[in-house]
Length: 478
Image 1: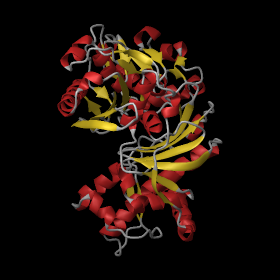
Image 2: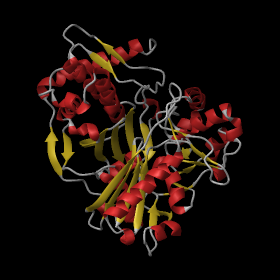
Image 3: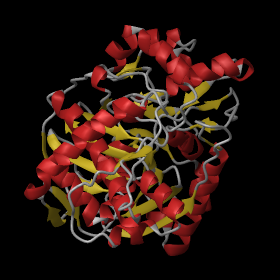
Image 4: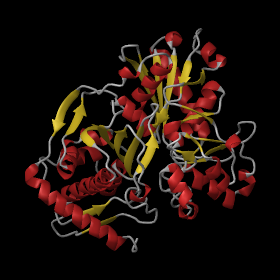
């Protein structure tokens, strides 16, 4: 059996598969996020371990874990998990959507070497500016840092006892030479750190260590269990849906939104605010546009109007042309293409006819326009996108997918029912670390294809142009 562990912002999931990639069992444990101040977002790493223990215990109740031979890891990226020489956590982990370090990020981004070496803008959500914030505001903690680990790699420390990261996650720190797939001594030095304070690096499908004997004994495992490098959440999801070569892409409608395209070469364009990262397989990269609030926007609106998010979308019927009402989904700033941590969301063009359904459509359309921004940014770099697969909780809404397909003027494939996200990708990477070939990275069977509504394409294009102009108007007002 092969276990994929996917550490999400709101839960940790474990997915057990066999050699034929058939799902044997799965389990989840909830996670909570702390927001002690505006723009702050933190988690206690101890909760990740408790969650992982709960997942292991639940899986052990469902099946015999003695046949486990590999584990792969996936997790939310960019989190700064700071530990001392005794592997003690020094402070809560600042998460991917924490924007407190926007000043440090801007200062680092002025230095052209960060973009030229890492291939990316230094975003406030990335790891390096978070640690720079600690250096400026909590020097007594900064001085104790022995290792900086990404969230899933703190789980790896618990599993294996080793300090190891892999390329896809490391590329989101602003310390990796993304083309060379190695830490940059120069970028580390600029932030007061050294290579010794970084974990060692492996590829996502390589062995990073083996499961500690105390855990093997607890679950009746007698053989060695390899732990693969794994991948950042989106890279692992790419492996899960078979997006691993040029032309393949997926759109993820989760808490955040992602448009992810695989690439056979390294071709960064940092100025576009497109993320250019290593993929979870050797000699491959990927580009992605990131929206900070996707289903987060819908859930916020559902809470505002006191209704269920799923029911709001189910009640919409067939796709309609966008109305005068625009929603700007910048509830916590935005990444692609604006790199703007300060901008906030807005409704524009409200009128007497704007009822709950119209507001729901506007919220969904706002996220659609944000995806169109990312699509334009990716394709402007020369990234090839032939077809898109839909994943994430929001992909259950045909209305939302139809709007995205119409805006991008591209069909969207919806996989058959099943889990094809980060947990499956992590499990596949574990299989490869245990000896399987990369041929196992296949696309799932397609249940249906959502095609663009050509009669509404111009209406969505016009609405997107108004959306772009609206951003220019609100960015200094919010």
